[in-house]
Each structure stands twice: as C-alpha cells, then as structure tokens.
Amino acid sequence: MAAILPKQKIQRDDASKLKIIIVGAGLGGLGAAIALLLAGHDIEVFEAASEIGEVGAGIQILPNSSRVLQSWGMKDALDKCSTKPSQVNFLGWKGNTISSMDFAASAAQYPGTFYWDFHRANLHTCLLDRAVELGAKLKVNARVSDVRCHPSGETATVVLQNGEEHVADLIVGADGINSRLREIMLGREDPPVLTGDLAYRLLLSTKEMLKDPELAPFVTQPQVNYWLGPDAHAVNYVLRGGEQFNMVLLVPDDIPAGQNVTEGNVEEMRALYKDWDPRIPKLLSLCESVYKWRLCIRPGLEQWSHPSGALTLLGDAVHATLPYLASGAGMSLEDGAVLGELFARHKGPFSPRRKKELLDIYQKVRAERTEAIVERGNTQQYLYHLHDGPEQEERDRVIRAGEPGDALAWKDRSFAPFLLGWRCEEEVDRYWREEGQDDKRVQSML
Picture 1 (cartoon, rainbow, N blue to C red):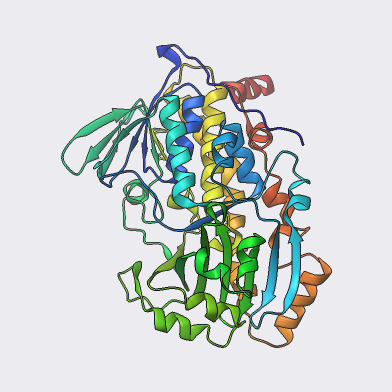
Picture 2 (picture 1 turned 120 degrees about the vertical axis):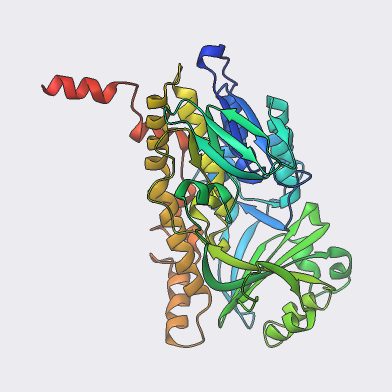
C-alpha cells in the first residue's frame, strides 16, 4: 500500500509568520490549527467551554479524511484507538439484506487510505495532542461576543464576553453549526435550517451483547450496518476495539422549538423500532438512558470571509450537513487542510491583499464541493426513509445493480470517486495564483 507521507513543519521568520486565532476547539478547529501550525504560523485556539473536550458517540472517517489525518502525521496515534470494520451492510427495516460493500476493496481505489471508526472523544484527543505537540496555545472560557476587523485588513480583534480583547492577523471561525462568528460577519441572526429529523445517539457495553448468540456477531465481526425504513433509519458499529457498540437512530424531529439537544424517553425510542428487525429491539433493551439531537443543516454562504481578509469561517459554521454520508467532520477537516496548504504555499510577507486572495482561493476550492455534500446528504435522507412500495423497490434495485444514484453512496460510481478520492494539493493546484499573477496577466493584455 502506498503510504501517505506526513507534512513537515515549515520554519518561518517573524516577517512571514501570521498570528492566527481559531475560535472553536472542536474537530474542525483543531484540524485547522494543526494544518496552519504545519504551515509555520502561530496559533491560539479559543474555546467557550471551561474545558476542551468532545461529546457524542461514534464517528466514521472515510478515505478522503483518512488521507488528511495521515498527512498531519497522525496515523500511529489514530491506529491505536480506531476500529477498521470489514464491510458495510445495507438492510431493509425488517432485516433483509439489500447489499454490502467491502471496505478494504473500496479504500484500495484510493491508495494509502482507510475506513476508520472512532469514539469522537478519542479522535478529538488525538487532534488536540497533535496541535499541542506542534505548538498550539489553548484558551478556555473564551466565549466570543464580537470581532472587529480593521478597515486596512491588517488585523482583527476578538472581543470576549469577559471584556478581554485579543488581536490577530487572521481569525478563523470554527465555532460550529450555531456559529456566533457567522452572525457577526453577516451582521444579523442566521439560525440553521431544520431538516425534520433528529438522532438518538447511544453507546452500549458489548458485554451483554456477547451473551446473546444473535447479537454477538455485531461485536466479533466488526461491520457497519444501516437499516432503511419508513421515515427512519438506524446505524450501528463497534468502537474502542470491541468495548462499546455505537448506535444511532434517525427519526422524525419532535424536539420542542428553541431546543437542540434534550433527554430522550427510552420507552418512546423503543416503540419507534418495535416492528423492525428483531435484533434492533434486542439492542435497545440494553439501553438505559438516551439523548436526542435535532439535526440541522447550513446550505452555504455567498461569502465565506470578511471583505477585509482578516476573518474567515470553516466547517459547520458554513456548510453543516446531515450525517447521512458520514462526512460532516470530514468536510471540516478538509477545510482546515486547504487553509493550511494555502498559507503554507505563500512564503510571505502576508499583505492584507494577499490574505484576501488566499481566502478567495479557499472558498473557490471548497464551496462547490461542500454544497454538493450538503445536497447529497439531503438526497440520502429521502432515499433512506422511503416507505415500502415502488420507489423503495427501485431504490433497492439500483443499490444491488450498482447503478448511478446508488443509495450506498460510497459505492455510487457517479459520486464515490468525487467524495472519497479528494486530494488537497490537487484541488489547490486548480485555483492557485502566485501573488501578482493576475496583475501580470492583465498587463500582458494591454
């Protein structure tokens, strides 16, 4: 297998080094920190919470994201806490097999890459450790109330809720789907878009599962399973080397207005799946408590960056997607990789005009792709939740035949290479402009 070589940290003098503040210490913010540290810049990460950590359960990392993470020198650390499932299975809601895909065969089309499953906290810890190792400074209890961009574009000032002010050459807003920095940049409130779905997320201990002959194979033969049913679907896979079992149930949203996460009623959750594949009610009988999460999206922005070139956004703050392609975090990591590549290629110094040019390239590289991912996530919602009947039968036929539009998107030949074969450097090459290149081209035309 062709190994993906880690990037080496660029050494810069003070004249060519930027001071960058990243707002948000989630997966996307830490990824951007790593990429920009490798590019040779000084990075401080601000986190509103009192400690830096990650909530949630499992996360799937696809080949495109595994390429990025390995390029940041993280393969050995990630191997220690990952599970590599053998295949993904698509099932009807009653348990009938629709189709499967072998993960190793799929990843082999993108040499050096993997399908990895993690507990989000483990992935987050690995990113945090790598950022700190590279020199990131971290600041907690740092809730942002405002950002002031200097008219010249030289700097921007982050104003914290406690009154502190911090000046940087560039601010990166990685503060998630309910982004404060997005609203500051737009100058207005801008709530995310409801999708009509919510997620029950639960982690089960595998000890009890192993006692049941019907459930034990979920643990002993690690695979990813999707059940597709009327208005709902379910996903599960093993975490932490078989210690835990991650299960996500996707159902119609009934969370009261104004809330995004709330404690769920276990009995209500079980009732929604009582007539499904008998293994699902068995699994849910092992669950004692659960939370439910409202699923929202952000379809994109006309401008990702402030006109000054001193503030930009990434990840869910710009393009939050339904989790139905397992690609939300992956898109955030790709955003960070592109920022890092752009701010590595320019050797400096960084004039306000040059920062703006680089951020314009950043948006050109990322906008069309991330909008396509959000749109395909919406399509997956429709395909996964069909009621039994002619449309569902045609969906299953297309999956089995492997035709374009395959609901098992990772093997959809009209989509999978676009999603999984992404390479940061090649994408940046398509749009890269040296400083003054456009001016020279205009002069040559005069």
